[in-house]
Image 1 (cartoon, rainbow, N blue to C red):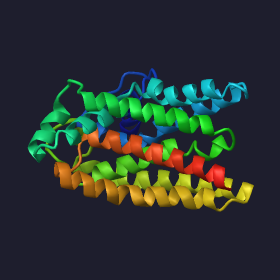
Image 2 (image 1 turned 90 degrees about the horizontal axis):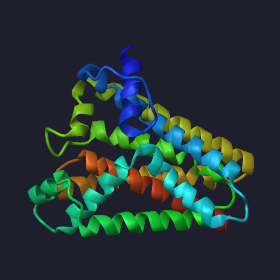
Image 3 (image 1 turned 120 degrees about the vertical axis):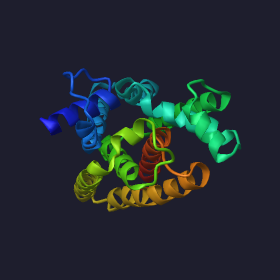
Image 4 (image 1 turned 180 degrees about the vertical axis):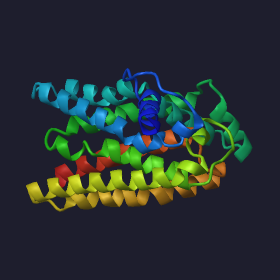
Length: 255
């Protein structure tokens, strides 16, 4: 029951998929991030279904759907983190000021620009992705597994907040092991796809992106905020997804 409740908590927090009511105890919450990549699998399945229903000549409609599907399924929880992070970084204030801005529910001009820019770039990349969509789909669970791994192993910027309630010491080992297993499964899937099409870069490219993302995130989070927060985790997830999507679009054009 503990793991079942943790799964329900993960889905109810990180998606808008209707699930049964869970028992929100600290014991259950500490394992919720083990199931975080399941939200990515749901997104990947929806993207695949949209791809199968898509009329080949309607590239812009296809791209619009692919851009909006993650927002619809997640309710924009991670985009909110990206927007708050953009406002905080653009303030050029002290570390304390930036953390204060992250907690502010109001939306600033830089947040709006970051959201619009992200969606525009995502739309443009999806519009260029007309083949080999299967290569991109593992990016959704992989980015969430990497975000969970970072959440429990990097220093928190503060002792309160939503992320802190999901990352106590008791669940760190379990979330770390689960996240590494999820990442391994995603890499194995990419390896199978690479073998199937004879393109080794299909495995090498995501492996390099994921390997580079975590140390860059750690350095920037520690430098500007003193650690990680829920908003930073959301921004990290969004940017990792974008990096993987861009990498595969460039790969498709070159290979």
